[in-house]
Length: 175
Image (tube, rainbow, N blue to C red; front, side, top):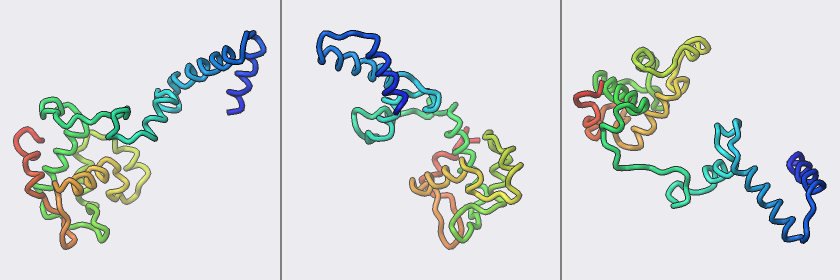
């Protein structure tokens, strides 16, 4: 923040203003320009975009995130997450019921099987984790949580099952 104030002070020394309103307008324009400039630290987003992402609810008309609930399967077929999620559901269907850990996570054997079929990068996980648990394989963990909350899978008596709602995603073309 200090460097921004120093920068504005330098600019104000150079430029002459006829009124306080003119100076305020100049400072506001400078701030707007800075806030709309993409930053590498924000993944290419500007400070204004990052602020909206953090503080505006997703269901607001002003949200920078727009969810399209009407995407067709054809539109999703090349999305990595969608393709990998379908593989995950098929793996559950083919091995159901899957013994779960005490905390309800997928067991190490299933995690290993999922790592063997995924397109996600797994070499760093294998390199740094002597024993690989579900939470070490982030995409698998997040996907399982999403599917659990969406009732596409169910956990019962320390076992994970495929569920009727999830079966429609494991039909032809899912592999």
